[in-house]
Amino acid sequence: MSGWRRFALPLLALGVALAVGWSQRELALVLTLVVLVVSLRQTLPPQPSSNLTRSGAYHSAASSTQSSALTEGEALPLSRSDLARFFLALDRAPVAILWLDARGRVRWLNDTAQGWLSYRAPMRQPLHVSWLLPYPEWWQELAAGSGGVIERVFFQEGVEKRWRLSWWPQNDGGLLWIEDSSERHRVDAMRRDFVANVSHELRTPLTLVIGYLETALEDAAGAQYDALPSYLERAHREAQRMLRLIQDLLQLAELEGTLPPKRLWLSVGEVLAQAEAQARALARPGQEVIVLWPEKDYQLLADAHELTMALGNLVSNAVRYTPPPGSIELGCRETAPGQLALYVRDSGIGIAPEHLPRLTERFYRVDRARSRASGGTGLGLAIVAHVAQRHEAKLSVRSEVGVGSEFSLVFPAQAWKDQSLTRQTSQR
Ligand code: ADP
Image (cartoon, rainbow, N blue to C red):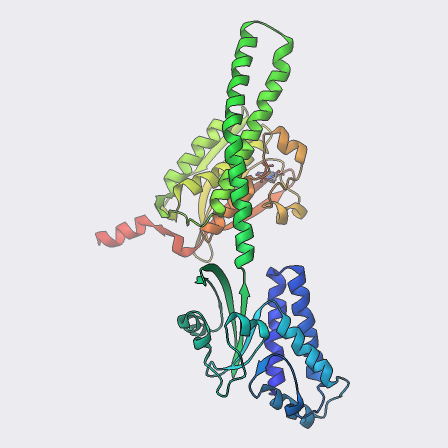
């Protein structure tokens, strides 16, 4: 296989893979590069490699390209300047791209990589990539698997940097792709801190306002004064809603923070009992709360506070979106492959399929008026999704309009165990 083909295929794969996680600008760039590479594969001109001038650095890669293009006798509409422009575009890409040989030595790297890795190529002997990375062990971690991604935080001249390194191995080498997400993380952290600070600042005065409104309501009730309570009650209700919104925003900020969840082995029975108590406290007349107690002694590795928060939101939704008469059922079940699902099922209004993919977006509501009227903030499922993500669990939803919904937190095999099984084994 020619050098160019080896180069083009990984880039093509990268373009497709990055389509999932990249911004439109970056994605457009990658796809442009991919298209260029593909067209180059088909139409590379037969020019001597020694004449090729470009700003990036390479070791012998271009020459093998030229000869293979000649022997295959392909069409030649692309000029040398087209090729130079293509390399220039690669050089200017806002990611570091390194093409390594089978022994991990750098055959080619773009300008961005040269800048970030402080490596001014070409050098007489190609360097091994571990010499260039801030920490050589990163390369061992990447090369140990059959291709993967690692994200690392380090300090460069006193500034915190966050790099995401992706390794795309081929038979005879591969591509190393480095993205610098430091700025994005800094902006994310600023946004998070801002929302958390504003919410925090608003909480205290709002609590005070609610206190005064409650006193005013009590006074008005005592004075048997008719006109006042209607708008006082409304003000009180809205202030309560604002407080819930602020509390949800603070919870989200906490979940988005850098502190990992405090995971301990929890009894699933006790977790369900807590959720049941929440459901009974919220349930309205005509709503039946049912718990299907597990037959086994399941233990779950989870953060108790976060799990209560997530189940609390699911229970609250089930109650709010189930008009009486109706039922709210809680339980857990083993699902394939080796997973454990904690679920909250209701016989409520249900959700049309087109809304399901967007439910966990902040402030996404199927029916805004209904959500507001029932005291919703539009943040409940975003919180649940965050908790799930922090526990490597999945939030799964099944719903049918007019029949009801089932929301489940599905935990992977390593996050749960059957304690009764452990006891039986140790008794033998
Ligand atoms: P909200 O505070 O509006 O309930 P959530 O993030 O908790 O916000 O839920 C998002 C939307 O998903 C809700 O507005 C509602 O339309 C829908 N939803 C959530 N849970 C249920 C449920 N159990 N039954 C029907 N619809 C639901």
